[in-house]
Image 1 (tube, helix red, strand yellow):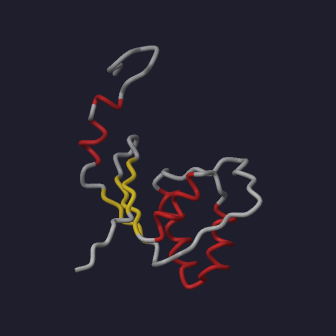
Image 2 (cartoon, rainbow, N blue to C red):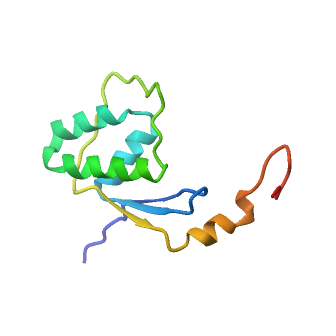
Length: 119
């Protein structure tokens, strides 16, 4: 019997209520982006290590950007070298079915100066 560890990140946009599941090598890519690597550097590394995943990685980045999970700043981390490996296809799924529930949760309407809840 083989036991596989889940390689998944669950991401929530509290503003829109969107929930995204990033799996496979997509979690690795997201982790590298989260550490401050720029999208161009990540795509160059994917092209170098396993170009068959390049289109999937581009799609992952576009989905993260379109759902405002990934907002690239003007100065991404200036690392000497972005390095990671791809073991499988990066995937992302978007779930909007709980958006109203997530947006209406008053715990996310806290403001340090105004208190909880301020609306």
